[in-house]
Image 1 (cartoon, rainbow, N blue to C red):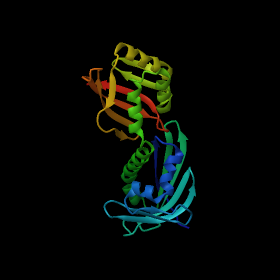
Image 2: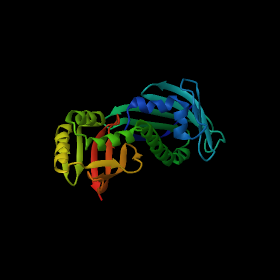
Image 3: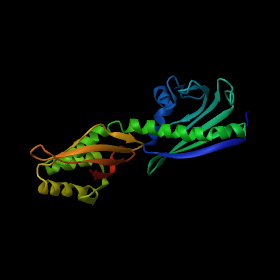
Image 4: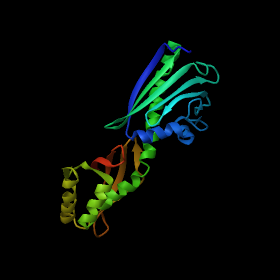
Length: 254
């Protein structure tokens, strides 16, 4: 039995549910989005695991344990034998629900301390990439949600406006801009109604693509009056919940 006397640990929090995160351990297409084109995983004990890094380096190993949606264990080494041969280390990943979405605990065991030290920055980087890949997929529809948010500000029907907001934002959503300091949908809905009263005919529209990173989205917008003339521009920052709804929105006017 192999002994691994040296180890490194890293914990990160990903703004997606454990079920969503675990998909990337059981599907080769998603596994490759994380590691690189040509990477594959056979998610069963004894299944083969291959990692092909963008720089051409190849690592491989064997799946030891898979327990959706909470645990994956696999061995790992490099085809070249440098800095460690195939089977010379073991990676354990545990997922657990968290208020931010998912807590990921990684435990990587090695036979050699120097090799362990070489992987500290590697995992710091790879788990950052992993979080981005997962949340990009989880929030693939954020552009549509942003458009619905802007449309709600010119929706004249109160019931329709409230249905839209409830579909895209959590009940406790916070909204801040130079004219707003509101908490919760019950506060936001009448605030929008007041905005329509005092700025009749104002329409907000997204300007350009939404930019997203790890559960935070940025969207530029333009405001036009009933005459079609531009009245203002700005950027909104949307903080997303683990299930993709808006938790907080901050608008910055230009």
